[in-house]
Amino acid sequence: MYEAHYGFREKPFSLLPDPSFLYLSKKHRMALAMLEYGLANQAGFTVVSGGIGTGKTTLIRHLLNNLEQDITVGLISNTHRSFGELLQWILLAFNLDYRDKGKVELYQAFVDFMIQEYARNRRTVLIVDEAQNMAPETLEELRMLSNVNADKDQVLQVVLVGQEELRDTLRRPDLVQFAQRITVDYHLTPLTAGETRDLIRHRLEAAGGDPELFTEEAAAIAHRFSGGVPRLVNLLCDTALVYGYAEQLERIDADLMQEVVREKQAGGLFPAPPPGAARTDQPEPAAPGVPPASIQDAPAAGTPPRARPAATVAPMEKAAPAPASGTPDPALIQTRPFRVAIVGESAVLRRHLRRLIEPYNIRVIGEFGLEDSQSPELNPYHVDILLIDISEAAEDCTAEICDLISEWNIPVLFNDCQQTQASLDGRDPQFAQRLVAKLVDLLPPQLRADPAAARPNRA
Image (cartoon, rainbow, N blue to C red; front, side, top):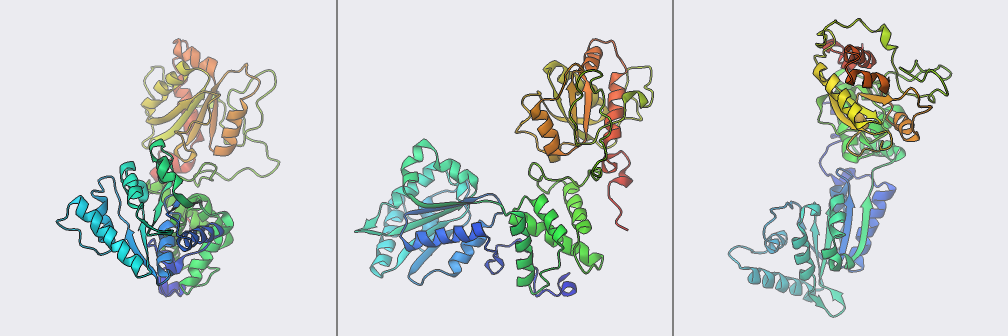
């Protein structure tokens, strides 16, 4: 659709594992070198692992296109837990007949094949992609199959390619013999910001287009929200080209890339960015020298909490008056739920806060103490507001919480836990509605109840 507009011969950011578009970053070049070394030196087992979308399959396709002529290769690319009979899949990978044969016959057929290839001065290499799905018992069967050797030569070489779970499986105590036979292994990690920029340029040029089509800022945003995962970079950039074509833009700039990210995240299918990634639904940070907004319920005496970069709220007393009854104010109930994480010293008070705000269509996605801010269950993208229940008598937040606030870069509401206790004791029946009003005030326009504000206007 956009190829002619931008002068491409083909789509530059296809998600298919096309080796002609392979960008050999430093880490991919090293992984390829390790694969080639393992094959050249008759390594029994070679393992290449990496996260989803880091380019493992594309690397294998490139390797297959550049193998020596004296290698016979079988490729298994579709493993799963209900994998079935390993020997049947192996024979199928080498185009051997596997039908109507028992296990002993399957084994003998493959051994005869390997010996025949060896007699022809050819090496037999089995490559298993998505190997993280193989059960430990299947891996052990593969190890036993590799015991067929001839003098000093390795008759069968095995290359396992898989996600990070493969490494975890190979560390199991019952697979120690397997692990000891792994001669070469390499783990692929995501791209750096510079490598992401070079990947985008490389693919644009490989497709016959302008390598400078994406601005530096657009490439930086693609890196930040993809985490440097090549597949996600391709997804964002391909969508950006569709948007750019729709608006007849000559270049893909930061504003357009931000819009792509917002749309992808709003759809709920795009993976959350890694911790520390910026969010597209946050206001721009204040200019240098501008003090942050006031902190709700900050200590009235003693040393005030240290400066916090995240957004804060106006004092509670400025909120709209609450109804006399204890029922939720309909004006405060959101038509679209938003997500709050609760941090506080007391588990009882945290649970009370949860009970207070959930009737207002607010989703509490996690709660944890002031000392355990690492909380592996939470990702900053999954949190819209951080609610911190802290005592007025406290001179400062814990270092862990301050680090968390700085890293997450999301709106924060500081609440006096003595007010929470008063609500729990029944001494402050209107506390919940004042609290919810403050939470709603913190929301960026995209998350307010008005659906018309959900999508920014680029006009």
